[in-house]
Image (cartoon, rainbow, N blue to C red; front, side):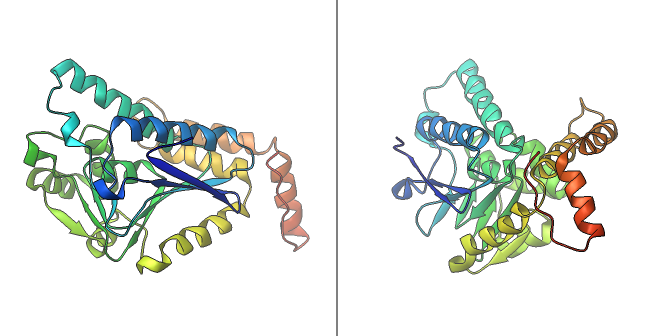
Length: 258
């Protein structure tokens, strides 16, 4: 089905591998199109409760965009390219099911932007992060200027984007860009461990957490109003009734997503 990505469904988690290790998993248009299809599957397949995006091979998550595709683009074509990236990465960000980036190796340029579009990030100790587009006379174009600023603050984000510097996994952890740093061999294990914990919670509540957290950074949405509405909507679900009864009865809740 896919040529540039690979997917595996295990324990209700769809593992999405960017599969161009000979090109350090660089994002070309085929990768972007196939990634979009995989994310559509996460939305639509009821068997899938979560997803992990990672890269094949030991060197790179995604080392950036495929620069060879940029050489002949006009201003209008460059804008169209960025628009496509914006749509796909926003679709990841807005997914009602948790999507984790498991960063193994380089996450540069579009790779860093892809990782930031996920709900949170886990990094292997050998991971490297950066937005070095200024070295090419470019800027981040897939939402990186906005998401990086939101995640690590304006000052650090501007320094990273203007210098083109690359930071280590430990620095990314200190700066708030990633949630956890683990040994490379434990990367997918850690992602699975966290997702299994999330799978035990109420799916509709998880989806509402994602929606409200995203609203906090959307200038066109009142985040507090979103929280009020989503909080109230929880009271119309069977899962909230089950959760409250289980708490009172001192037993584990059995959530059904209803």
